Length: 240
Image 1 (tube, rainbow, N blue to C red):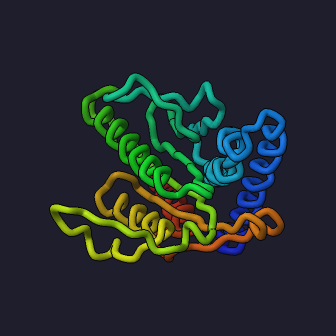
Image 2 (image 1 turned 90 degrees about the vertical axis):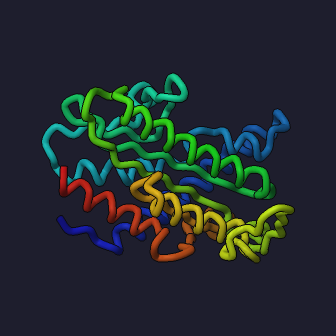
C-alpha cells in the first residue's frame, strides 16, 4: 500500500488549522462567561481533524470487517485499574480490538504543571489498557492492540525556553538538561515507543497565529513526526 507524503502534510495542515479555529471559536463563545482559554481547552472537538485522518486511513486500506469508532458511544473501553476510559478512536474487527488512539493538546501560557499532567495521563492510559489485555479483560489470548498517542503543542516562547530543574538526591538524565517543554515532549514520545508503552507517539509544534492562518506546524524530530506516526499505522494495517 502506498502513502503520499504530500497528502500527509496537506491533511496535517488542515487538522492544525481546524484545531486553532475551533479553539478560537470556543474561547470567543466562552468569554461571555469569563472562561477564556479554559473554554477552548474543553471544547472537545479541537482535535477532530487528526482523528479523521486516522479514520480515513482505515477506510482507504479497504480491509474487510474493520470498524473505526470515533463517536462517544463507540470509543469507551474497559480497563484494569479503572472501570472504563474514553479514547478518541477505537478500531475493531469481528469483536477483536485492533487499535486505539488518543490525541491531546497543550496550549500556553501554562506549560509547567500541565506537562506533568499530560505525561501521567498518557502513561496511565497505556498501563491500564495493556494490563487489561494481559489479564484477560478482552478475552483469553487476545493480542495486544496497536496504541497510538499524539500531542499538539503550541510553539511559543514558553514551550521553547529551557526549563530549570533540580533533584536533591539523584541527577536527572542528561538529555533533560537545558531541555524546553517541547524538547521534553519529544523525549517523552521517543521513550513511550522505546519502552513499548505505545506503538507510535508523535508531537506536533504549531504557533497560534500562523497555525490559525495557514495550519503552520513543525516536527521536533523525524522519529516523533506526525508523518512517521501515520506511516507506522499504515504499515500495521497491512499486517491485519
